[in-house]
Image (cartoon, rainbow, N blue to C red):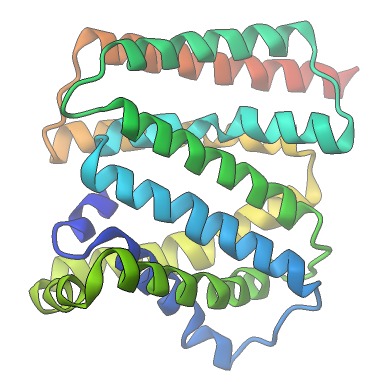
Length: 269
């Protein structure tokens, strides 16, 4: 919902660049660069900044409603688990396989009911953004960083210029200039919320959690995002909530909850 407010004036790639630019400055003057490999920092910055948010912003502006985007992006849970299986050789239980099938049926319901508000193109963009989020999760987990606030700040330095270069190429200077001049206080407030609240606090806390716990246990906690996202979008942006959308959302959330249960049972045993 906050992203949608900012996109009312700013083009999506420019919004991404400003988000990570404000996350880097002025924090970089007070925190040193983390002692992690440059390639790891670059991977995280490109996966989260360019891959996740560049694609997500573009999708929300053009091809999917904010509430549905907040739901579909949570498929990062299963992408994260899939990467854990491929890289860390984790194994899925039968319950986790069933959870994946339930979640997939919810996504199928969304794909079957595409319209002007939620398109197949938008669905594909957000699913790709979710994959990029999962790749960023793996990068942060393997970074060996001791202070994840520093990690997020300095990875933003790599996201910002890349997104700005893409904005110049795809969106062009006239649209950038128009977006900046037309932005009012609500746009700048939503930008600061995303830069300082979501990026500096939210993602630093998230990366710290991933460093302390198994990814398969922490990733499903994000199922709270669509609960808030869809509710706020319906209440404040008047997003429609037909029965198919509620049913699809319910199936995806059920699949995520089943995965949490399966992870808890595995940890207990």
